[in-house]
Length: 95
Image (cartoon, rainbow, N blue to C red):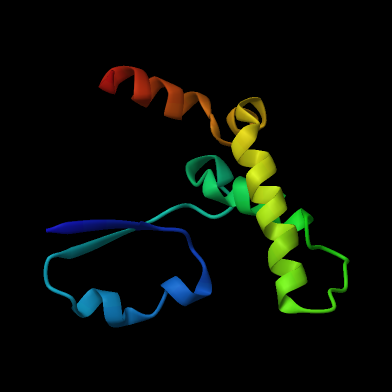
């Protein structure tokens, strides 16, 4: 058995996943970014390219790479983005 947790994005709603034996899909409730911390991370990443016109895809990739590197080096910023209380509690139980 495999349990897959998906948000409610339209691309996750097709019925094909219901035909896979042993696959259980749990959908996150709408408007619950605290259950999917990656959403906040990617929102921050998108800000690095929003409202900008790039001359090439390489220039856009460079802007994204610079933002990724800056976030990777800033542990405090990453904690603010991703460290919800429920995640901290679960991590403490594992340690």
